[in-house]
Image (cartoon, rainbow over all chains, first blue to last red; front, side):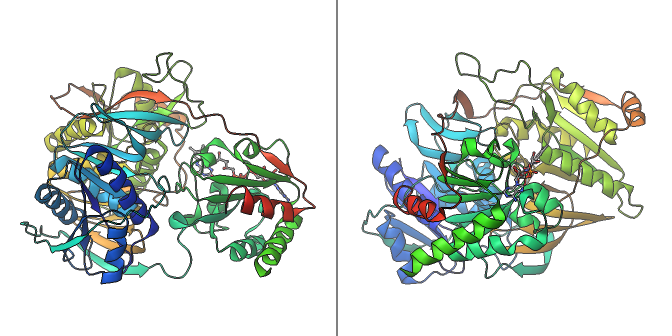
Length: 323
Length: 248
Ligand SMILES: Cc1cc2nc3c(=O)[nH]c(=O)nc-3n(C[C@H](O)[C@H](O)[C@H](O)COP(=O)(O)OP(=O)(O)OC[C@H]3O[C@@H](n4cnc5c(N)ncnc54)[C@H](O)[C@@H]3O)c2cc1C
């Protein structure tokens, strides 16, 4: 099965999720006898492109951004569908993120392809094509059977390990035979997110709940995050109270994340909260209530007052790091 | 401007998810059904906008693709203020089939703005809005966290992977909303509940729509291993465990 991946990048650098995607695509292509092609827009420099070859990409299709600063779902969908046809791909893969969620469903319509988002692991079988994904916001798994010749899928975050599988990689300029659609909209303001570690990409996340009592108490959490190089998150009531910005809210009605390590501090572990974090590899819970449901989901737990436990934990981490 | 809010009907978010013994479908007995939380927020915002005199919004309707047992949940949408509701009478197997049925109604009823939720709390496809836009050949915007309307244009904020954009768009278009669009969903008043009975809930027959992806079986997650408790006076123990056993 030949596979096309969309290798998106942030200002010329491929995020971890794209390298995971390349490794996954290589494993899938290998299992089914095929090769991996990557579509790259804009102009990442050579050493960045080399990373794709090291992760199993045999061919890179390099193409200009379909249009200026205004991201148009239609233009990207047309571009990807055209690249899929040009490379003869029977599987088009995306890493998870806002752009993929905006474009992949349109590509599926264009290619008359069956679609599945948030897939985890290689297909259970190829004929028929059956693949596993999470459903009911992390409460169960479902197997999707895709019957169309072409499949369009989004790989779940943090669900595949990056592997070194170097192959010979050629780079081709790709000129799609598409005309840009008429805009019908204008972007009047852009705010770039800078500085802070992005929650969805973070390896380690430190999260606070109502147990912190007030937005003024966040310093102890920020210190812990600082000692670990972690991103910050929070429960919904914390965002609703305005203690923290809504971008940090995780759960059923917030962001869904899957870091390697998630610290739940003063969070009870309501089912709607768990929905957003259940794919984390290791969950650590710090709560004064030994009966708090969060301990049913955590791998490690500390029963205690977070106002004492957190500073002590930060100290212990700093000490270990300085050794 | 006529707004259509797409609505899925999902198990209450506290439901313990169980499947039928053959693991082929959801065990629905005892489930309390609700409006998908994202769709409820979309409806809330649409109603807020309609109430503003200069928004140019003349109608807010909801649509659900599904069978008759969803009607009580659809009634709730009418009770909080939607003007009318549509239900296309078919159990759709996937997002593509849902989008296909929606496109038919959007065209026939001449809606200008269609709002979908970021994700459905049941099968989490998060695809319907964009598939619909592609079928209609409309512009679309996803990850929308704020929405305002003025006569023939809308102003929206879109949260992309690394930036937030403010956009002015001219319908027809589809938007897919996420967190931030509205705060708390509305609670139906007694008057609203009474009034809902006289509002139209139109049952439409499906058009032929084919999809090529469907769930064939389900699985409950493996039992999590027991939580290992650490003495609060010994945080260094946790740090060691994380480093050695959890490899972080
Ligand atoms: C439709 C719907 C969607 C929802 N979506 C989300 C969502 O996306 N995300 C989300 O998070 N919630 C969501 N919720 C809300 C959810 O049900 C819970 O109300 C919420 O997660 C609770 O937040 P919390 O754990 O911060 O607060 P609480 O439940 O109040 O828990 C606070 C915890 O802090 C502990 N604590 C207090 N003081 C201390 C101390 N000094 N030291 C240590 N521990 C202490 C307490 O023991 C308690 O366990 C949703 C609810 C609904 C109905």
